[in-house]
Length: 222
Image 1 (cartoon, rainbow, N blue to C red):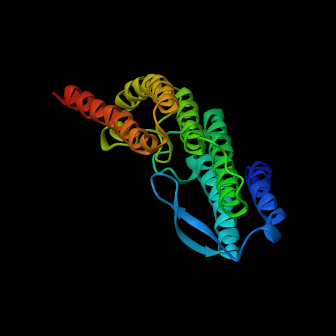
Image 2: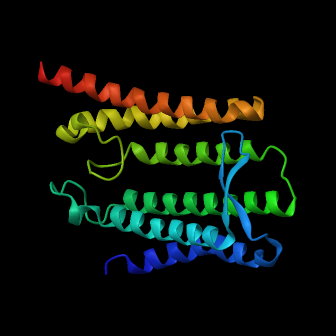
C-alpha cells in the first residue's frame, strides 16, 4: 500500500499518549471523566477502559485521515491534485501531531482530575494549541491545489480553479494572522471566556473565506 510506512509511523506516534494513559492505570479510579463543559469541568463519566477505547479510536482516526489526505488523488473524481503533493504529506503530519497532542492533553486532564495534580490555566493551553494548529494550516493553505479533502471546499472553489487559488491565498493570511490575534486574546482574558471567544473567532475566520469565494464566483459569472 502506498505511504504505508508513513501511516505506520504516524499511528505509532499517536500510540504514545495511549502508553502514557496505561502507565497511569493503577492510579486512576474505575470511572474517569469523558466529557467536559465549556469551562472544562467534567460533566460525564465512564469506565477507564472506555476512555482507553476512545484514545485508541482517535489513533485510528489519524490513520484514516492521513490515508485520505495522502491518497486523495486516487479517489478524487477530477484528479486535480498531484499524486505526490508534498503539501498534502505535510498536512497529514500536521493532523497527526495535532491529534496526538489533543490525546495527550486528554490524558493530562484525566490525571489532573483523578489524581488531583491540577495545572493552572489548563483551559488556555488547550485553546492555544488549537490556535497554533490553525496557524500551521494557514501557512499550508496558500499552496493547496484543488481537492475534495482539505481546504475551503465550497461549491464555488471546487467549480473554479481561479476562485480556489484566490480564496486560499486570502484564507492563508486570515488564518495565520487571525489565530495569532485570537491566541493573544485568549492569553489575556479570564479562563471562563476562552471557549466562547475561541469558537466565535474560528467561526468568523471560516465564514470570511466562504463568503469571499461566493463573491468571487459571482463576479466571474457576470
